[in-house]
Length: 115
Length: 114
Image (cartoon, rainbow over all chains, first blue to last red; front, side, top):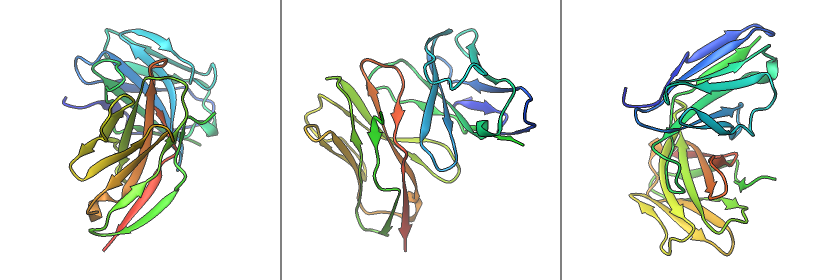
């Protein structure tokens, strides 16, 4: 597709369950980012991938959060033992490279609700 | 510490008027980039404009311009001739040469009224 694709668009899960969120970046984009946006808040950086490597995982809030990227393309963000405070919109973005002036293109996000 | 500060949680402007959205930033890097994104109610993040720390001229993109005051560490977005479709959240962001991520502010909600 032409843009960053995220699935599912909405996910409702029970507290304590594991969830997987998927991101398909724009073809050819080597940099991939995950962000979290809580209601009425700004974007909180979670993790950055360059190719399949994650040189910056500093934003992952706890060890319940993990992410991987395979083939330099698709990325999966996994949240284990979900908590209610994990409820948020999870946004994925990709960029052609990581330069100071490189804009990031965002997907539509996955809205996660933990009940 | 917050790297990007947007002090206006909400702003109103009348159609066809100009509006300025404030953004201040904090960095010790000499090289950095500043971005503005728009987020309509549909949720997607739309890139608007970029300003590099070494750019001598203020960036402009159509009705958007950036009032860059490096000594004050401010990068305010100016929207001229506001349109109803400009109603959205606006986020200021910065990428530093020492990092990878775009660091975002908390955003300003803009409402354009007829």
